[in-house]
Image (cartoon, rainbow, N blue to C red):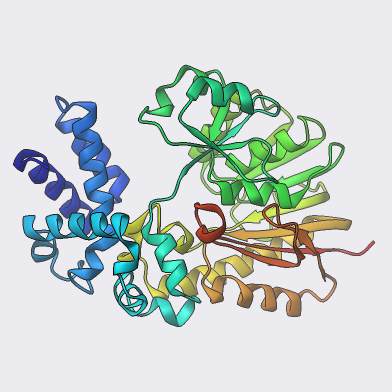
Length: 381
């Protein structure tokens, strides 16, 4: 990395250490330095994400002294660590990885093994979801791809250099960028064509669109979120992807459900700590706190408690979060099962292995993707 690129990289890292989201800081930094080439932008982006992935070897808390933690020497050192890991991953002892990859409090709330840490230290793949039946066409057009494992008939990973948001096939709706663990949630929901579903925390609609795809654009899906701008983005994405069997409604997560409709299936993909995304978003390792985990667990219980009122007899409730923190996973399941005795555990089938269980922990060891926790209940008829 040249001195000029190193200086720009440092500026963006320090903005992120000051509390700005790294993707926003990166976007604004690259926009300011608009004469950079594509290769130079790629070098800067890789340097920033490498820094946050390996800065734990430099300091246990880079947020405390950001200037010292983000000096030129420190940034170069993280690049050296990443190169060493790529060339000789076995040169890092298990104890070393466990001690440095994230703050110490993480081990108190999340089951962490050396093998899991190794998976988090390797950048995850960029996963796509093609329109049904069009994966082979898409693979031939993009070329630099890896086909997903059995159980994901529409998924493939892109390994090339292009910005896919600018690709003509993206604008034609031929594919969505969706992590494989996120795609697993839709597959485990197993929505049927004639069923009515509610994506209660739809965000910008990635899982809503996947459910619609799995339902072959039949039946009906309600999509809700607290933020109207997210629903507006969902509308644009759905138009591009040719999805039309949905309705949108705001929901604040309270007892006032967005519709009196009773559902065959409800997906609560709840706001969470995002600890399962720390391979893709390593900055969050240093900004997330143990307090965040506890507060989000309380919110998740609230969302599920209210959402269950929308189930019809025989309906299914699916809970998913992109984290493996126990307070947000097993403890939420235990709390809801105790507070809602009318619900029964629902066995879900993992698309990776075919294993059946009422709870599943998806890890980057299985998927080279984010981590995800999924649980299911059903309301007896």
